[in-house]
Image (cartoon, rainbow, N blue to C red):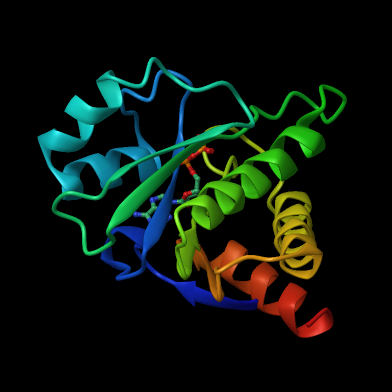
Length: 170
Ligand code: ADP
């Protein structure tokens, strides 16, 4: 499984699925969630309303509607509470659950935003290390049709961290 880093807006990514850093209601919010709903159009919210929310660390798939991506996989990252509230485990679980769902749906390309590193306050360096490691381990573990995982970085700090992290461990 190839891991790549790109800087930019995830709503522009023409991949099989983009990942949304949603909140547990799945009814929209700010940050990347707001951008995805704006770009996908109102049908996305209508489908999300049928899903009855999503627990932290889990993920659910919808169509992509007006997005160039065919699907959106909505996941709910942990709010950073200092690091002793199972945040690392829950963040890793988000990346794994998304890749499990992508595998079930036979998807080939998946683009992740930097989950939890916006308003949820997860330290970017720690979140980056977990994202890279969890995706790498998933790729090594077994059979998956997922060939490419893109880490889509919106801000310069995340972009630098992911470039550095991938160059050190690839
Ligand atoms: P969370 O609540 O999980 O912290 P946020 O949306 O606040 O979610 O932030 C998650 C990450 O998404 C942040 O690193 C933020 O810079 C990034 N982000 C915001 N808008 C976009 C976008 N359009 N495309 C990709 N990443 C984005």
